Image 1 (tube, helix red, strand yellow):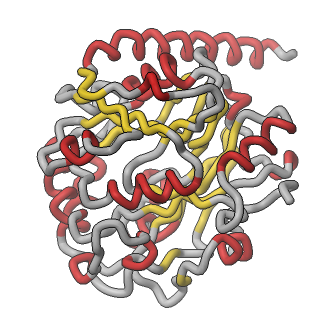
Image 2 (cartoon, rainbow, N blue to C red):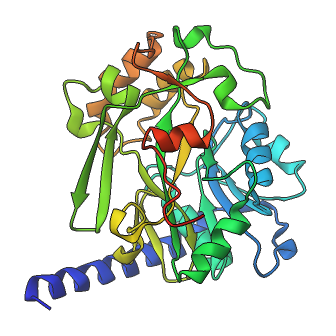
Length: 338
């Protein structure tokens, strides 16, 4: 092995140990509100999330992923004021922690998530999501995550990657009508197909994806800071694994292989319901808090643009019609899974 590769391998191993140490320390910032983790059984598929003021999205988020096969949710409430905690306390399959500490100082919540994964996720298939994401897998009308993970286990593959797909309506954000609990694509039926850039990144052995309506509308002059859309949200977890940057990158780096076409693995889509009407107020608050980006000043124009109630619709937009259409559009793939 070349000296450079050995040196990189050593540095990434050191980084992973550092992230695990951070998670061990940051676990002290989490206050257990309701622990139902004694219900977790061997083989259960678990879901992990950090949320803030997501009461509107949570009913569908939970129902969608329950139907997909998640048996227990481990959720961190980061200072919600909209009834999020009260709602989650009423859910029998949710364990809840709360913290008012800085989301940014916890590496945008990933130190907290890594601490829970370290403690509860070992040897489970673990799905790590945001509350505005809904995972779509191939054959999702007839198969569940249990079918998918059983197939991955036979291949000795520990990961399932998914592209985050921003959904939008056909008018201004404020004109979107969403009823709590309804499928997100009923209110936000469109997505972009053609404007995505895929780029191999050697450091973490991952494929970066950028594009979609946010890149088209808000970052057309600065495409290099448009949001990353590649994620590895589903992992057969081990206590020594660690997420680096949201679920975009995980260590060891061998786990970032989900989009490698040579492996012929299935991939999914994360339907992203960010652009509901409450997003305009969230943009104002997020910009004031400065909690959601490493260099928040670079995103001032983005937050200001969202607060002005833009239209994201494009004539090239495609209406969501299920996983098969996503496969035709190259958003997800069934790979060798049949």
